[in-house]
Length: 119
Image (cartoon, rainbow, N blue to C red; front, side):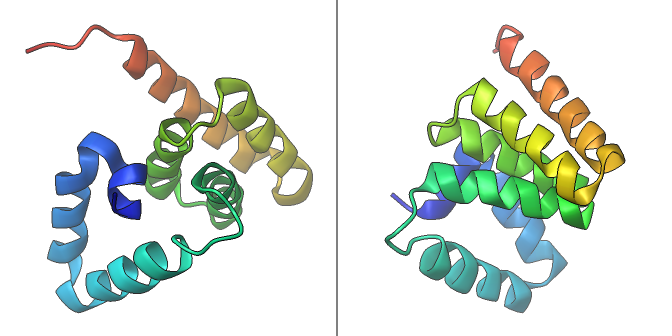
């Protein structure tokens, strides 16, 4: 399975379209280098890579990307507690306001996941 599909799940097509729409060449680099080369390397599993991504994105203050990788962490085996601890740990090094914003994003994601699916 593609690393992108493993992380993005059911959002795969929407994320791929949005990135490609922003710029097809830039998306090609993100797709090929970031996801299919670096994130596919042996040595760390996707769960660990996603937890690290969350911390980095909190430091950068990138809320949209944090939301994607919060879902990716859960999708790749991280427990709710592991994600929460990752966010709390990040507060020490990157600051409480950014960690709090990430925690709010995570809580919203958890609420959304508990809602019954329509369709």
